[in-house]
Length: 193
Image 1 (cartoon, rainbow, N blue to C red):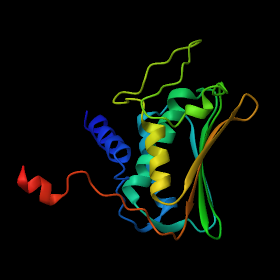
Image 2 (image 1 turned 120 degrees about the horizontal axis):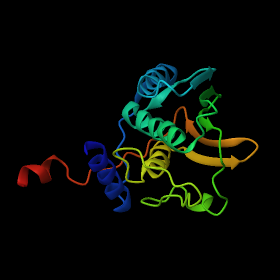
Image 3 (image 1 turned 60 degrees about the horizontal axis):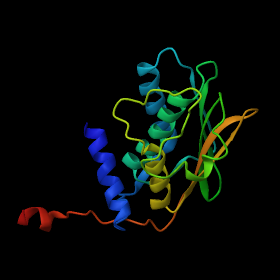
């Protein structure tokens, strides 16, 4: 319930133009990824989740927000990917960017759904094989992942084919002018309530 409320508040902030609030600080993305993989493996011992990391994975990012985005992508891969294929979280440090890629095998996302995949409160049709939603999910995980990337001056892309599986790729600038959103209710508003 707490996660759903948090997702709805994030949605409201971004839709009202306040942006997603971020608090950038030095972060080792490799350490964060190892923690996330351990958490998901303990909750899904029957699924294979691999981590690949190369290059310098340090930068200035909001740890909680990056955790939220990557967690949403891994959760999405668990929900929609085939259990016959591993999920791979790949991290690659480039000179000015860090690339985060979450890949899973299985049926591709229908091409007609790709243009709206990051829209809020929209779920894929999956009409041929409907799947149950993750507990606490209201269909905003990919939207939030996109907004986290945008709030850090980055972007997210998706590629999905029957031959290559599905990959969600976030590119984050290592050093950038952060777009720090404003909370809808700041301390002054809360004190007046």
